[in-house]
Length: 470
Image 1: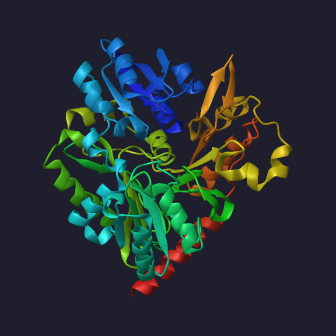
Image 2: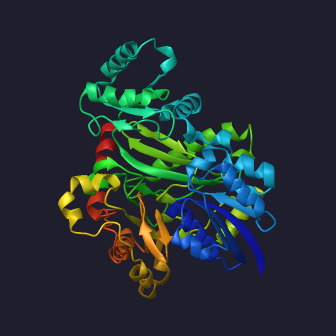
């Protein structure tokens, strides 16, 4: 059996899912080299070499790759920060190891301003109404305030405030969720404006879907649609998070979508791809399009695009690949990936998170007091469910680390469980069974990920929007 060495740049369950897929290979003897944000228990167990790089610094990642370059055939990158900072450009230049992720030039999530301008040039119909506010263009904050309020008049206050750069200031703020007065909105605006340009765009009503594609530089291979749950609490309440869970139906579309919706998404993304790839084929290798679409009464709009696999959305896909994931990666590197075979199955991902994540501890302090915070987390019972469900369940530690042979949750999403089934509800029950089997650390989860009630609500909403369109 051919030996293959793979570098995985890891943070969270997204990369763990890829490590899992690689180590399940039936065609290759795989050795995994992990550059990780912390001592993730899954990665530590599976890797032949594991290094912790807390800030995922690209120079340190490159040094690790260089040290092991004689044993590494290729690499793949999960988190966005190293991609934005040019990890592929640096590693390929210094080591010759090919990485599966876009080059720095194509890391489009680095700038929300550049995204909007790119879409305006190629597919203007996907943009909401928006205006860019650049600090360089305003003498004082009062001038900026007048311009902002004038734009809010046009939008009837229903606005979304987005910083240009990821994680600048207070991040994205939405009218009705993060603020309900102009003063609150402007406070949010100024918290971001001090760091650089800010976009204010109209708040759009619709149903969201996540669209991901594998890309070999020449071809785009769309993956099935997934639905992410951004809000912290049940019934879509509470602050936005990195995603509390997600689901995928048996086929390529979601229950509230029509085939024509997906066809339109593919058409839109292909338009952007065709313009980009004319400049540089290989630069887009990886997952250059992880698009947050929103389906409205005026057709699909794009909320944002990312240059990496989705988390949790890629966990809905990787466990049901029919093809060996190593072979898929080789096809990406060779430029001949034209399709991907997946099982006909539904998948549901549910995250368990620490008490302070999503504001839970502040919102439900009495509930949190009942549990022991900061104690080890026991994943044993969840892993034992493979005896019952076999390949139908996957347990992926995310923001967790091993300390003296025990596993602890850190500050972000701690662990997710993927349930696989012949329909969404079956997959959901498997996922929830795994989640409930995880004990310790005062971890909590949303209980309504992929619930029938939530899906039916989305279907009714989409039907109403289609009627408006007519």
